[in-house]
Image (cartoon, rainbow, N blue to C red; front, top):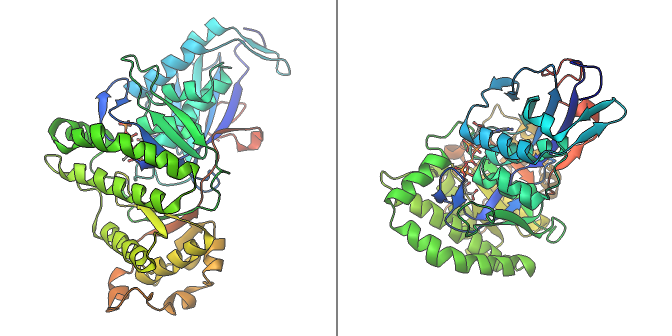
Length: 422
Ligand SMILES: Nc1ncnc2c1ncn2[C@@H]1O[C@H](COP(=O)(O)OP(=O)(O)OP(=O)(O)O)[C@@H](O)[C@H]1O
Ligand SMILES: C[C@@](O)(CCOP(=O)(O)OP(=O)(O)O)CC(=O)O
């Protein structure tokens, strides 16, 4: 190792998106390697609105691996973190930073310790796939720091061992996690189906129904499902393989009606297998069901799907609108049905891409109050009053790109002199 002994710190910062599955992963055939029982497909969300930023650093002065998540130190002792660290270190290469006079030989990585700081710009463990963005970012940033030769697909097989859905966050656009056949998991990895430019009309609106931590984690929920549900076998063997083929076609052809039907029915089936689990798992709540009703009624009235919905292991709704125009009409419907509480201002109630609000002709709370029931709603009883505050806030976003290294050093989360959080 070169450079001034014990003093130097080498660091790197990366940003990684989150993703939402449109064909769900639910159920493992190997718990340790995290191998799924079916393929899954996701859309990557614009990291401009939802992302993880992670700074990784190495120095001979660090005496053990440490990690801070959202400013708080967390343990790296868990098996999943350890698997990722082990797999990355095993592939580390020589690194040289001529400017700083640092030289690291690949065998040195086994002895050197890391400091890692990560920040999610959205609620952690609230069903917004923080583990997906988080673990993908950890693997991606470390792979760059340690100069790995592996491409993103090979890196995805490492991220997969941190959290299954994380493997799909190594790419932007639409991504498929191929379940693979090998017992060692070497062929269970993510591939990009199309990049984010392929279908750039789509607009995504997320209703954050509850930002509280959920009761049943995805990990234990899917374990219980595999152990107790008879339906899950039928889903994995008969339903998903056909749907994956149809979904790939729908994405390639930008066929929104097929895309919406597949997305909605797959989300519904995922929640059906949760209900078929014993004891049953309820991730959606009354608000989630009312959002489904609102979208279904509208789609039916139009005679063709305008919006798709999907729900992960929590009550938050992710809605995908076919274009900006439908997204604006959707937002009007959502704000009519789920207005903010009187003390909430619109600016914090609709976040992300606020231009959708403008398209919807909504500038302030007066415009929200003036919204009239959409034509498909015949009985507009006191719904408005009842639903105030059921949605915490909405995030407007779109499909987005994959992981990137941030070259602007001011974005680093660790102090370059101490290697501790800023
Ligand atoms: N930025 C991050 N870096 C590393 N690990 C993270 C990061 N963010 C979250 N995690 C890990 O993921 C865990 C949360 O995962 P969990 O599956 O419970 O919630 P979620 O991913 O937000 O929801 P879901 O996967 O159901 O959509 C955290 O406790 C932490 O261990
Ligand atoms: C409902 C899901 O979001 C489940 C995600 O499960 P995780 O990837 O969080 O589970 P582990 O692999 O045990 O970490 C569906 C999906 O993202 O495909």
